[in-house]
Image 1: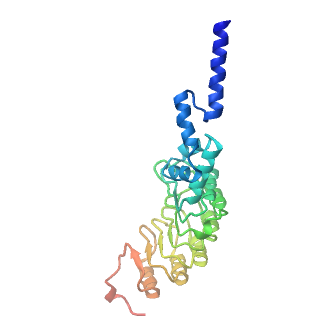
Image 2 (image 1 turned 180 degrees about the vertical axis):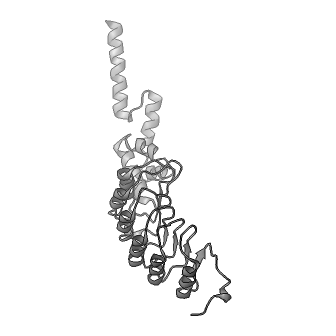
Image 3 (image 1 turned 90 degrees about the vertical axis):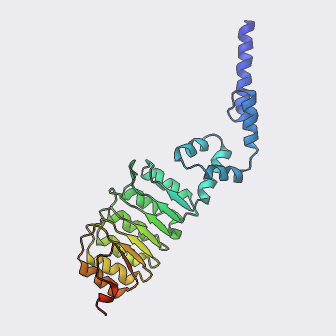
Length: 252
């Protein structure tokens, strides 16, 4: 009975340490945890901002309320968020974007691991407070999205300057929306967007007066279309450019 009582006391002591030291199992670990608890939330947020793994940040958020506040603050400070190489779905991606109030660059590019983001995810992301301030968005290779999701997103991203929608199945409908909603657009990548026609390209160049660069590699549009685009905006950089020298182009 004496031995049993001793074990019970030891068990109670460990429980007390967990409650007071944030889950530490022994005295030394409890001391380390106490020191961590003394760190201000701002410093915790800075530390968490150096962690790129969303899984690790999720675990850190579950340690205690102070760590959760630090993780949330680290997202609120982010100016760039990338899901490239991460396996995220619509709801998790939307939650992270909605928590990033100061976001300026959003990368949802498809990688070898693949982002499981669809039009539904773009709809949810478009409701985030940071969308109006986004200057760069990449949806490269996102084959799960359509014009519906892209139109919804770009209609809210009115400050957009750089857009990559290469490798998707968008059509002219998306380009019409971009032309009407993104007057500050400077560059766009339409790599292998084979459902886009010259009508969409002309609408884009006509209305986006600040457009400096457009990537049309792999598109099914005639060379005459590019000549026409340059007649509208002579300084436009068309990449790759399979055209005669500039001095050989017709003068408008």
